[in-house]
Image (cartoon, rainbow, N blue to C red; front, side):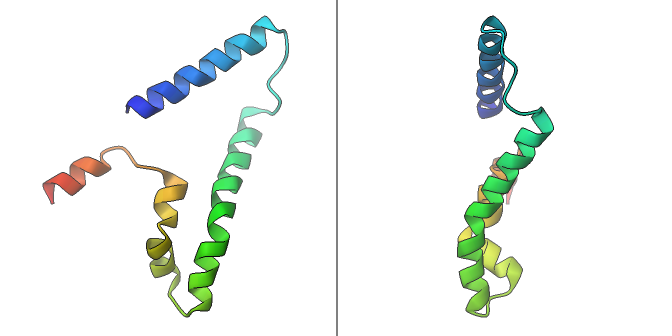
Length: 85
């Protein structure tokens, strides 16, 4: 949770700096978020693709390369589930 709070704080700080400089953010928020998502997915295309070419199933390829964890990050409550299992 601390990571999310720091991320939000950094975003607010950048927003304040933009306001003080009288400039607008370089991209509308939705466009920027989609661009970041595309970058995360793009980073995983080659590793997952190599696994798929070796004959691995898609879900296994994602698990082997840890692509899901990389794109989605650590989901809230995930550590708690691991600790209780």
